Image (tube, rainbow over the protein chains, first blue to last red):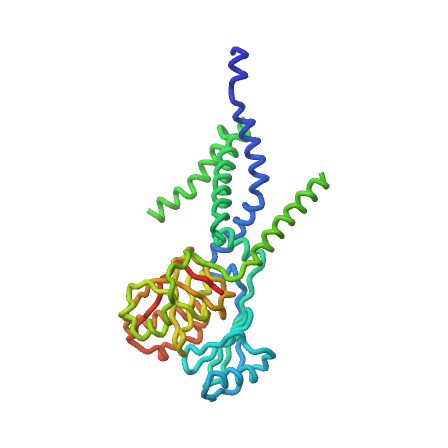
Length: 192
Length: 161
């Protein structure tokens, strides 16, 4: 082979390894964040991945006052709350809702049954989910698009990192085929 | 090597802290598309005469009294009159309302949708709502009256104050 032709050839494997390595470093944090968030939001039916919602129940003496301000004052007193609510609402004549920061009291006025609902964000997981589901929109859309492209580059360059019997012409081909067969098979069997 | 790692970690923390301080400096928050209408319509007016508003785009303002627990895909807004509220529904994923929105004021825009529900449909809707609220165990179908006129807003933009 002439020397001039050897120099002109693109060292594609070296480029592939370099791209895979450097993009891998750049993408590692977001890959882990998105993967954890993916696990969390996959099971929406079983739990709330964003908030720890607790509902506890209490009973106070029934409230039979007539006006809303009187009803609110009595409920606050009987619930032994130290501060007035930020807001209150009566969805129907029998129910009073008191809104506090991260806490809502639902009072059934004729029975005095109270449901106390509190919502606390699951720190870190909440933020990961927000990013994963592109809640910030705007600039984050560009970041997420760039990340998606980076994952494609990582996947393709990853095929060519190794050569020989462990590379794409050997064991790698079988594993790649297996990895492709899983979504393809699922699509053919369940989604068509 | 340790120095390089520590420097890069410190730079990351500084960057994130800057972003966080910018985010917390904002007052009020917009969700979805920008609001376009200049005037708000009282919720009580919509509920009093829903047929007049059916299919029309309106802007409403009120207290958020409920948020969809599962996906944050709807909120219930209190009317300007007692014992009244209206559901503001958004397409899944377009807007996700945070649970912290409960008890805050919102200005929201959407199209009024009016449906006649039989008692069975009203019970099914109330059961679904109880499930989303996590109060299904205490759900009593006997308390649901029907047939009912279901009025809701299908929206794409809101500002929580």
